[in-house]
Image (tube, rainbow, N blue to C red; front, top):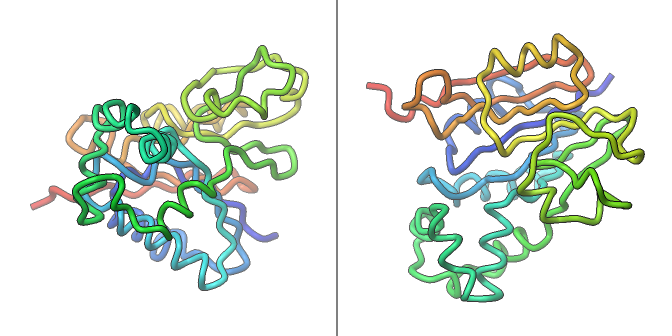
Length: 226
């Protein structure tokens, strides 16, 4: 069986992302990789992360990058400058520095195409992949983009979500918590293990979930290791 892999929030942490994909997971072209958003902001290598994703796609790897709230904030800020303060409050300036530009208006077109082309959720069999979660009260929870990038829930009652296992990022969790949810066969599995928060006890890991085997694979962010 071909592997189905999801990776949580990267936030400009290129080296652990590369380590996880190339060395630890050893991604093959027969694998399917779904990225759960938040490739940019906070960390200082946002451009390298996006370039790596685009390069893998161009080489024929089966990769579906989803939008996170940080990609949505960037795209919104480009279209409407009144949205810039919100993005800056959420570390948007680190992304501008990574791209070597001073203003969002200078963002190269190929990257704008990447950010604007991101999907908001992906269904594969009985699994739903999303950055954050779904609007449990909507007639169609797949229409509410705001909820998909901003709002998480521990469980869902919406009829359109029944029988599905939802795999998401957005809110950081300890690796041990994630493993327990997997062990307990939870229908909602968060896999953001706080890669960018390597200085906070218990966080600082980038995690991938191989969905068919429910194996969690985590690598540490050693950016500040001596």
